[in-house]
Image (cartoon, rainbow, N blue to C red; front, side, top):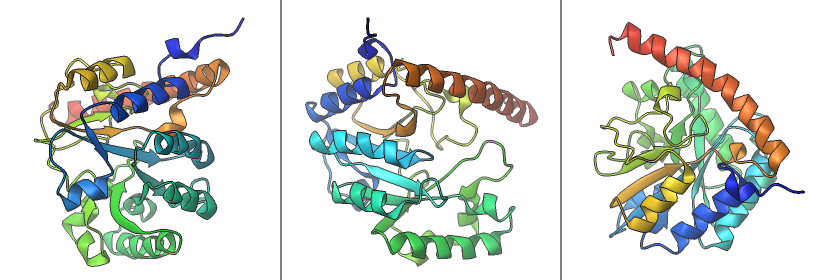
Length: 265
């Protein structure tokens, strides 16, 4: 007898339900770039995805969004497992926005001058494949650098970039929801995935909670970050991903506790 994956969270079926809810709601779904340009009134849902792994699998969910009339921003890492030009072009062809998921301070070992050179080189390579107007840092919990710190010394606008997903959105006016740690209430697993604003989760822990909040129109503007490579297709895949995330969450929770202890939080 098969198992109904609709009863599990972070599955393709559950993501399809979330997309359907957004499409049928009073919220206008927009990618990051469109939001930053302005002119979007009323209730807004900013849709954003960090492509950290499994870009071919991510394409499957990008197609689900497109079928429902949703457009998102896909931030692609410039590493071999995600920088796949044909797949990136296909995601863009579906109507989605492609952004650069930079991690150059990590790659440069904290050397800002080397990092900005890497940033320019990688951006040039990605722009050979697609249009890139926005960027978003990749947060490796095991390094001591925060890639956003690059912009304390440089200006991303000098590279034809209109905004950075963490730095350019006013999160005092936009409620931020992230599935980091495979939970929507994962503050204790967010080593670098955080925004500079007070956090109010509105009781959202599961995707069902998020769906209820959207149906109720509980907030005026929200930004949803989903790592689609973690949304499983089938029960065995769900179990495998759950086991992987549980071990990673244990490590990340310890890192967060250590950081808060060091900073007296």
